[in-house]
Image (cartoon, rainbow over all chains, first blue to last red; front, side, top):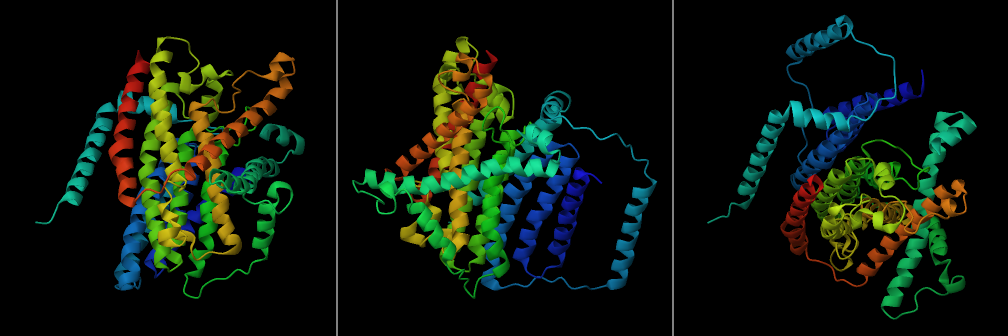
Length: 165
Length: 355
């Protein structure tokens, strides 16, 4: 077990534990903050996989954008009404069967897949190759996604601007 | 630096920790001297004397304040959300200190030479926003919550012009790595990006006005990101007591101050790396002249810290000169002026660099 293995297990533990707390905690604001650690742990695992650009994009988009938005939404509603979110269990039997099948499928996939393993090496930066791929091979998809985001942005702005008569 | 200590000790964990200590010492020094200077600068600008009782010229005032702060009782109000209240200062400081991992202090003293340097610095600063929101919400105080909301809105908005200018610089230099960016702007000030970069061609002269615009935009927006006057509405004392850290006292409050000063140096460092050559000397290296190349990294560290301090002094100067902006003016400055200009600048720099 070397240095990087230890770091991997730390990040994995952070991700799994905080994800568990996100769904089990009763306080919605705690869920939102636990989600911060989940995103952070996932970013750490991306780094260990050698995907540095994706890791930073993960932090940028999820922590810097989506989580802040979530927090804004939750904070402006929680203390005012004092809503306790439901995290009890209903329909235990169907839930157990459903999650059991899903778990079995995941575990089976884990054991029966022929994983390609390579000797560990210090990965080079990926930003350059990603840029080339996005602007050469996948330029159409890239542009379409850009247009999609632009449409969403214009839609959001027009909804926010709508004035009352 | 890392390699040197690794060869010396042969232990990855120890050498990583030792390398991480250097920026920490820098942050502590910036806070220690920065608080003193802030008082002195404000005093000079307002024709006062400033602290002059503790030590010669009041030099030990910050040390005395620090000792006082250590002795303070850690008072926690009953109504706060204890868990989040205690984590928030740590998260805010962690976010601002994490940025130092990618900042090159000299060609030898670099935490991480990761290729995503500047992108990482911009992304990791979002931890600060989460920490500020956590502090504001858990304090259970309307002023704290208002301050946190304002701060988050401000930082998230001003990230956009910063990112756009950074993007134009990335386009020009062709790298995201901060150490490569500083390396490309070789010694002597006319090779810095603000003067069009190191390559001598027509582009260099065409770029100068747009570099100046980019510098002004990025300086204004990073000033807003560190929540300092004229952009200090998150902690506007005449409206919100102290904003998101109203309920904090003693060492927890000190953590917020520490992260503010750490942030000030970090954004100054980013501005100087993007436009003012990073650790490169403006007048050539003494080490080259007298033939002692081992001297160069030390000179580079000196110039880097000097540039950081220069921009911190400019920030202080602005703080004690300009009045605070109103909330709507603040948002108007960002969305109606800085972002369009930054976009235009991005396109023009792109066209010029293609010439």
